[in-house]
Structure formats: structure tokens, C-alpha cells
Length: 89
Image (cartoon, rainbow, N blue to C red; front, side):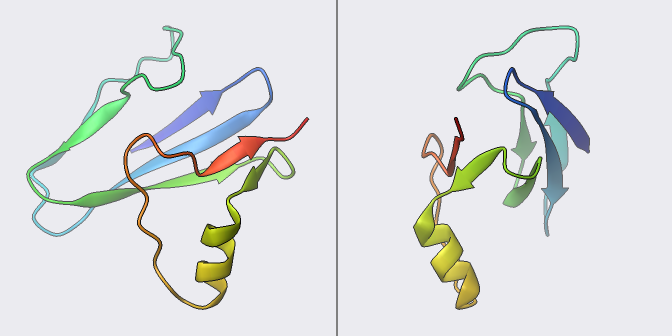
């Protein structure tokens, strides 16, 4: 499922990816509602999965450990609530 997240700084795209043994992806996001940081937009039922975030060019700066580990081909664990980027400006 693809969701476009509109912010005052620019747009981002959230892609929910169901992995092996995921029962379903439950999207609770509704485009007509306003959300704030930390609000739930959905969840995965049964099993693990991932999300892909796509940001507008130069919208934010990613955490350096994510960049360095990705360059080396390493996975970086990110827990719920941990920041992965900050808006520029």
C-alpha cells in the first residue's frame, strides 16, 4: 500500500511491504484527517514486515549510521519511535 504524507516542509511517500507470513496490512490512515508526529497510520497483522520511506530531494538529512551501514551493506536496527532523519531548514 502506498500513502503520500504531506507536511509543511514537503511530501514523503510511505510504502507498506508485507513480508513472509504477514496476514495483512491494516491501513488506518485517512487523507482527510490531520496527523501529528507519532500518530499510528496502520499496522501489520501476524509476522514481520517493513516500510519504505521516500522523501523529496533535499527535504531531510538521514542519520549518519544509516548511511554508513547501508554503504557497507549492513542492516541497521531501528526501533519504533527512533528518528531516522531530520527536516532541513
